[in-house]
Amino acid sequence: MRLITDWFKKTFSDPQVVYLTLVLATGFAVVLTMGDMLAPVLASAVIAYLLEGLVSLLERRGLPRWLAASVVFTAFMLFVTLILFGLLPLLSRQVTELIQRLPNMITVGQDVLMALPERFPDLISMQQAHDMLDAAQREIVSFGQQVLSMSVSSVVGVLTIIVYLVLMPMLVFFFLKDKDVIASWFGGFMPAERRLANRVWHEVDLQIANYVRGKFWEIIMVWAASWLAFSVLGLQYAMLLSVLVGLSVIVPYVGATVVTFPVLLVAWVQWGWGSDFVWVTAAYLVIQIIDGNVLVPLLFGEVVNLHPIAIIVAILVFGGLWGFWGVFFAIPLATLVNAVLRAWPSGEVAPGAGLAG
Image (cartoon, rainbow, N blue to C red; front, side, top):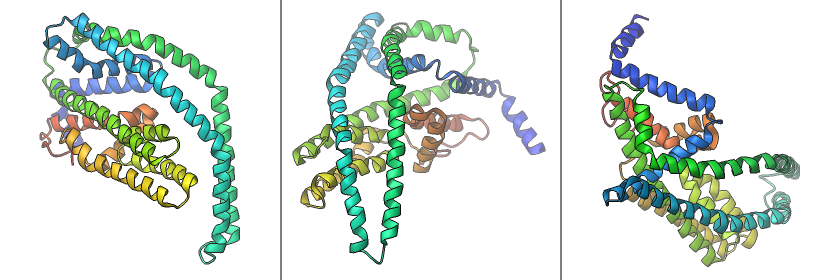
């Protein structure tokens, strides 16, 4: 107990540590308790933060802040419009076609499953095949009920989307345009001496900005390469599957593993175990190998120097706390934790320590 008391007195005798702890605790409490209510504001602040690099670039070229913010905001809205009215209808159409084909895919799977006892009698019996089939049917029924419940509550979801589409563009624009005013207002509530917090923020700001920029280009490149490969090989639902492959890079290690199943399943249902299936599998594996061994080192380098175990733990912890957004921002949040550990004054954690690999 005395060891803990001595550590507490030694550490928190520094006002810088107390201030940093209060800032982190307050931010965590606000997101945890009011995250749902403030979701449009928090999401808009994140988007504005991601666009700030372009605004600063235009400012350095001589444009006034309001004009630079207006140009970047207009380009961002054009990009969102292209996604909403160009990509989403195509994805919706392919999802509908895939759902309509599910009964046929299930029938094919049942036939293959029931043929296993004849082909491999020493490995699986007819009773085991029936048990597996019953379990699969129960899961399908459960999934159907979940889809139905989601469709019943879709009215609320539509209203929420409408609110987001109206509020978020306004919030993003004002966050970009009035960044200095907002930062000055928040700075009025903070102590003048905040060296430790500034040190943590400087490291997090540098790493997160580079990480998000690299991750954006990684998604685009993996998506484009997957769509080109799937289209050339004639795989059905090429756009839908390539979007899934592109988005899978958001969740390192886990995303690529999960997306492998729908890609191979669609290819197997379409062609069986033929050469076309082998070509699609090989193309998919080549894309994953290039992504992991060429794109990631090229785009990120040592920007996010986190051990794979730290990344997986961050995905599990923050995903459990905040769902999709927790998974999406797992690595930036882990970077924040790592920056705090580096800057913590009790022995000054070495640059390669903490969560770093």
